[in-house]
Image (cartoon, rainbow, N blue to C red; front, top):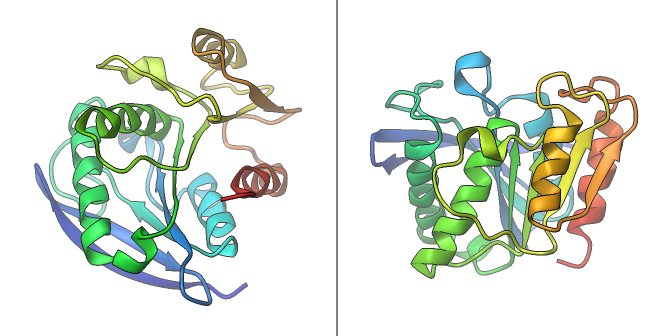
Length: 214
């Protein structure tokens, strides 16, 4: 599948936020926001989990937005333990509704991997509190929400949680604790580590199934 990408920026609380927009072949039926892992440990918008999820969204007809967090690439500011990053992503969501009105008129998907899962979960809660448009689907991959949580959470019951059986960064038990606390089901990929090496096709298929019905 050929992928048309576009580089852009928007204004956030700490300065410019750099993002990539991956376009579907036709007019987008909606959009997705895919958030990358820890900025201080090599996480960027080009992480393989992020691009795998993005491609699944594009194949589903969604415009996929992959921002760089503070201090990564051309995004300004410094790492802020998910507090500033969550505020930045509120700015990105507001920007998308203005800059991409056709895509934003359809359903949207919020996905985060590792550190990005913590930002995604708190972004969902922040959007709900501000009465801003909520995503139709929330996806938490390699869930590390509690490691960077700074606010109360209320997760939608259809949240899609995906975790590797042998995750060496965020143990499966940690993901299960979060799932249990919020009464969420979890999809466990057998033999998969944190970065799903050799399991990206399976991950993509799970994401595609999670997009069905949007």
